[in-house]
Amino acid sequence: MPKTRKPDVDAGPPTVMCKPAAMDCVFCRIVDGTADASVVHEDDRLLAFCDINPVNPGHLLIIPKIHRVGLVDLDKSDGSQMFVVAQRLAAAVRRSGLRCEAVNLFLADGPAAGQEVFHVHLHMFPRYRGDRFRLDSGQRPASRTDLDQVAARVRAVL
Ligand code: AMP
Ligand code: ZN
Image (tube, rainbow, N blue to C red; front, side, top):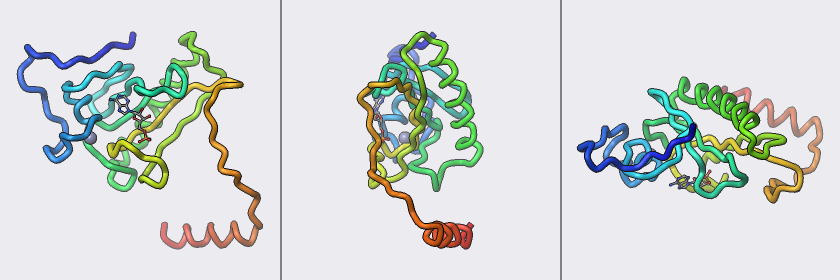
């Protein structure tokens, strides 16, 4: 059952899971219990809760408990576990009775990608035909030459 986490005024100081520099981070405040969240999953490394502005009901965010801004500083094991949790939550949302014909996973890494909260998070949200979410960048097919050049540039620095 989803539960609402609320600050517990009787519980004394919360366990701080992040550096003091990150205490202005809303997701760190959710982790340490000083901000509300509707939690669906918690383990020793990760937390998952409902997005406050859902694309569709069932829109969840999966975050590391430790403050990490983006992919470059995200612990590899946390990154892979975020995907595992997203898979599990996607299956749960499909079973939940919420409208869910399909699922999108989305991660914005950097402002130009649309990142607004600078504590890395993986979105998992249900989709159905006719919903209002649109991701249309107007992309066009590239030539094999261009694709090979791009692939070579990436391979060169792996
Ligand atoms: P992004 O644009 O990928 O950085 O997405 C940030 C997401 O965090 C948005 O979808 C917001 O609706 C969501 N968000 C911001 N503050 C909260 C909060 N306090 N609780 C739950 N979701 C939040
Ligand atoms: Zn944070």
